Image 1 (cartoon, rainbow, N blue to C red):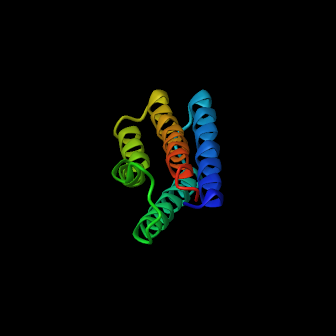
Image 2: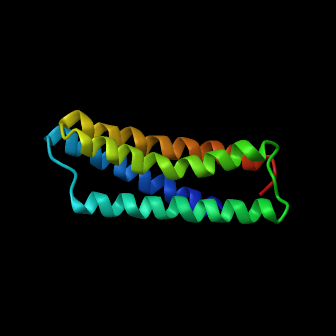
Length: 121
């Protein structure tokens, strides 16, 4: 697992989380620029999944490989689910649903890095 890719993903998600809090405080809707940032984050998650699968296939495996891959696949679902939920009910608090999704991804990424550190990669 690549530390640089994970750091960029965490940074993008934290930026998106701050952005959504600002939108909620201002009682503004989610705009196209935020959607673009969330798309970038989703693409980074997809790249991270591909890299993780390649690393595991090459033989570098954390102790709990199934859990590690579960985190990697599960991350793909978090941002779309949060965005769908927030769009279903357009209110100030629904924007904060995206905030929670944007904060969940860095937590899961950090956990994946923690599992991977036992491999030495």
